[in-house]
Length: 230
Ligand SMILES: [Zn+2]
Image (cartoon, rainbow, N blue to C red):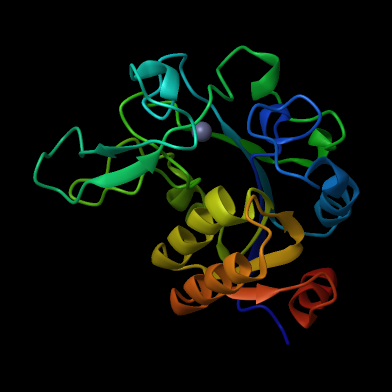
């Protein structure tokens, strides 16, 4: 196969708070993928970006901001701050994580950042959750967009490969949004790690991605050969 245009690589949220041993929202097996991500960053992708979850201390997704609420166990319905009648989203409340200026917000040192062409910050708007690198899930109107869609289009990117953490949250939502933004989108599954590693969880996640038009591949897939030959 050949690519229809240029390929980009998005390495999602490879940050201390999403990795063991000290991360407040650590994904098992995350840090161990650093070599895989570095190998991918060595391929001739036209854009190689990383994202950082980049929250203010008083971010709405932190259970600590809501009295009596427990992380993981409690949820919150969050309306579009710019239109009360837009579809609201129920968000899981988390422990504080990836707070700007803290160690937990830093990209792990094992990732070779010298190969990155850009770093996208997300989750900086304290009013809304933002799993996707493109921006929060609201559509009417969109709020707090990262500008990633435009910057990829300006770079001539047609195909986006998504890897990183966590597969079932920010990787998933970034990939689904990438399809909506018009990119041919691939998740390289063995370059991701999920929070929910159960067979049922994985099956549901794969179906959701495929239903939304995301292609799930692995490191040996022909799509990556096309990038190597580009
Ligand atoms: Zn977050």
